[in-house]
Image 1 (cartoon, helix red, strand yellow):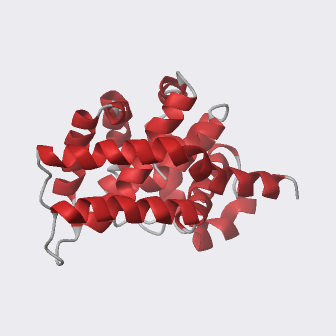
Image 2: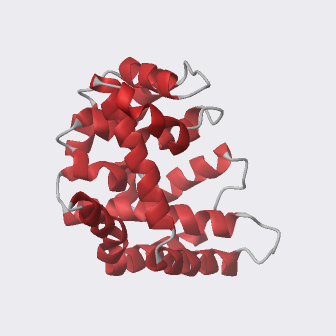
Amino acid sequence: MNYLAHGYRFLDSPLMLAGTAVPDWLSVVDRSVRMRSRRIRPQLDQLDGAVRSIAEGTLQHLADDDLFHSSAVFQKLESALSAGFRQLMPDRFDHRPAFLGHIVVELLLDWYISVRHPGILDQWYAALETVCPQQIQSAVNLLSPRQTELLAPFIRRFLEARVMHDYADDDRLLVRLNQVLRRVTLEPLEDHFLAVLAEGRQLVYRHGADLLMAVEGESASRAGQ
């Protein structure tokens, strides 16, 4: 799952919303800092205020990922997208098809949510803009054994860039994917891969509700316990 899919249910709690974004922010800006449930959960009863809300959001992210990535519908779409990329990347040692099959489903699910709920993407950004990036970084440094000074500046740049608006268009999505590929030192994609993105967009649109249900249904059942 990506940023919007993790957080759109928590727009009324900006600090928890920020927590749902923390693991993905760290994966971009400082991979040495890892958020782990086994470390955060034992601390939870001793936390309060903003730190607790951010910790709860981070735990929500980690639990959502476990449910989402193990769901049959995600694995089906991930496989279909990976196969589409593999047809254009026949080298069996090319790591990009599996990587792209995974992240393209996640990015397009954010697009699907924005179509399903018009205006929600701007609401997501607006809610996060009410939280101080330095406060988020301080909470992370309390929850993690490793410290970072890179997170707060990155959050400010992230909120200015508003990259998720680009997921609505295949050409702009390709640009964003190539930024990711360069960051992980993989070869960028050429324009003929747009056909795979268009096919993936149709798949996610048809199965988006099922993708979300894999997480929302389980979250609802836990809330009722």
